[in-house]
Length: 172
Image (tube, rainbow, N blue to C red):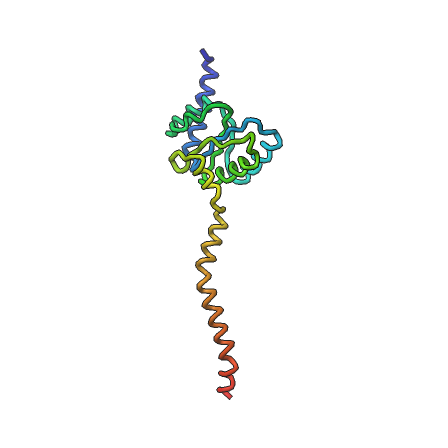
């Protein structure tokens, strides 16, 4: 039987992790076995830059936290080495983790995840990772909105330049 102090510490860790999971818009579970320290450091740096919380957690603690958060469908994924990436951005963890899963194909694998309160498959995580970053999407929308206005301005300028000398001659 575990010591009361150890048990209370583990319960506190589970409660803290469950709160992080509940507050996250998205989370990705990863099997990280075989990743080197240099690779892990590089990945963690990019995750921090993307404002993604990444941690390695014991499967039993993670299982309790996930069940407490309402994602019990993820239970079969808790075998082997497991880490979790959480973020308030629904796309950021999928984008960074997918990038490293492609880079380290032989020893880094996505297990599954959740987005906006529902469990998603590996294919859905990869589809999320393919979505461009928010600033790029905003630029595309603005470009689409400005294209007709820009075209109109170009046409009006061409008409003015074409009729410009004629209008000056008529005025004289």
